[in-house]
Length: 360
Image (cartoon, rainbow, N blue to C red; front, top):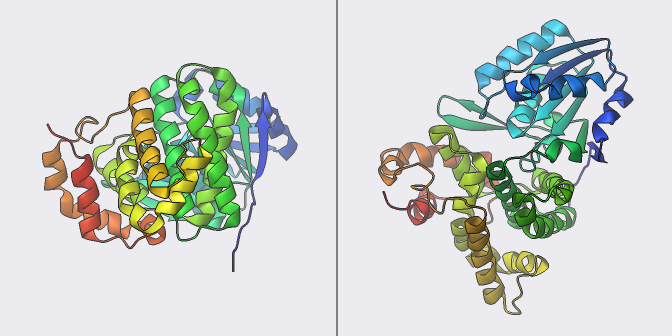
């Protein structure tokens, strides 16, 4: 039996943040990072809700910690809002989702992503860091009430962030399409997300702002797909390495995903071939389409100026070897491996890491 649910209301387009007034908030609690407080975006967005009182939690940092979420939870309980808003990238949304979840207050959450990557605005996932490990929380209660995709918030994105986040979208779509929980509805979203992202990511990276709403929508579609279908080995390894070495998540995905595709292809090569064809990477035979997919990902990675290996991303091979037992343990405990299309064992993790480690 296939199960699929879409609980999040989506507003998309130019000036879409004005939809905040629809929620009739009297007490608004807005979670964001220091950048959006300093440049006034947080205050401008909050004003559109027309709330009587507004409180800000603006301490979000990349890879938000359990301690940070606990601090935000205490502030939210003290303020007792009737609307919770997340403004920012995946870290801000994950932090706000955790704050709302741990506060145990039935308050609607509106997620306003400012990057096109995590898809967190429509998922049941939140990623928190504790010690040197990332811990995915998975619960339907984490899914936002509404998502606002406003193209006005995407005009000043730096190219490096576009590249990192964009490869996160591609990886979400690739992993969701072959995940063990995939079905007809998640397939449709994953296919369209991958097709759009592969087509418009280079233009967005080059500064063409008119394509960014499409990229934003592709990110949301990929989030819908993987929230239902699951992810896989690439994300599990990325979570482990990201928590340990603090390299951006999308950048790690870009390094890892070609090697993971190669590992999984023995079981789901025909599925990868379908995605390749829908994105315009022709190949009548599955083996040809699969090769075109891998080469297309490698070519796009170079075009976006992303590192080819972990060594180029600042993680020396000796650090991987020294921490291998901890990396393997974290990967095997990550819920993403449960939906990888082939069973994940230690030898498979080591094989991928050896392939992408690089030299020096």
